[in-house]
Amino acid sequence: MSILAQIVSDQRKEIALKKAVVSQAQLQAMPLYDRQTISFSNRIKNTPLGIVAEHKRRSPSKPKIKLQSRAAEAAAEYEKAGVAAMSVLTNGQYFGGSLEDLLLARAACDLPLLRKEFIVDAYQIYEAKAFGADAILLIAACLKTEDTEQLAKTAKDIGLDVLLEVHNLEELEQAPLGYVDVVGVNNRNLKDFSVDLNTSLMLAAHIPSGKVKISESGISSYDAIEKLKQAGFDGFLMGEHFMLQDSPGKAAEKFIQNFRL
Image 1: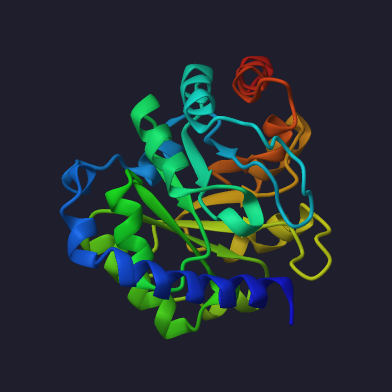
Image 2: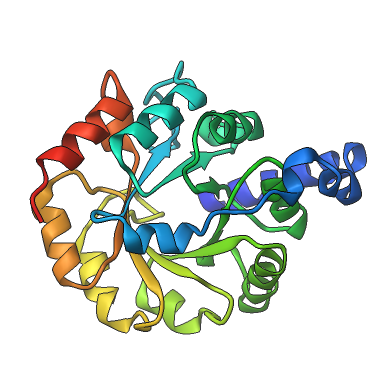
């Protein structure tokens, strides 16, 4: 079984347990559920570099990134740095995150927040809204086409933006984009975890012009961002490059200040 298939299998088991404890109706009754969300896609388009700064403590490819990181502290620092939005890993088993991280980040900043998770059930979308997210991630490699479309519609119906992540041209061509706000190209190969920015460069022209485009994974240099911007990308999801520094927020601030468009 691939690592992605194992994660999805574990997610489904966890969701079943959660549903037995907290109902969808209870999620919808939580204080943050009815808050006015911030447009994740518009903020990316209207912020010069369109950087989506990520908070994650570890990953299957890097088991120790910043294990003691505090989401609230990172959120406040990222906002001060001038990023467009923040991505919060909420998967515990594989990434060391939690819904509490999302909640604390929401309390600490006014950035649009992306719940980065392996979403396979609508329940997780209601969770995202209840814990302060403004957008959700859907990963094409995890979902059937019809499931992608239904989950995206559910998110849009409750006021959340949708980021659909693809890894290759086949996934992009098969993706239902009607309810999708942002198309993200992940440069990381899910089989061997290698990273190749050419993945984004090759797919750029195939993404419909009406969609906000972001490139994900392996972005750490000004040269890379310049090439990707020239290819038509509006934003860039950057996680490890900042999280591996002593202060992710200060690293993001320095990166943005030193970039010349």
